[in-house]
Image (spheres, rainbow, N blue to C red):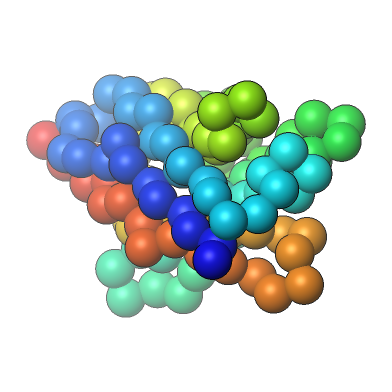
Length: 116
């Protein structure tokens, strides 16, 4: 059974940082492309970043480029999202997603709230 468990969210002041983690199980993580997606209050899902399993190439939405960094540790079956210079508009539920499995899977998410 595919499982994705996110952690690391919380309340942070504008300008602060957080690192999110997504621990994967039930599939071959090292050969699966992965993404982070967020959904803000009253909004639809917004793709924010992806990482290729083979090349390690990374991709970012314009809204987070230069502030967020996606990475992965295949030995630990873990996907990360380092978020710096956080803004109130980054407030959302963040979840990881599998991109190259026959069926797309996502975790329950971790809440990030940016507020003073």
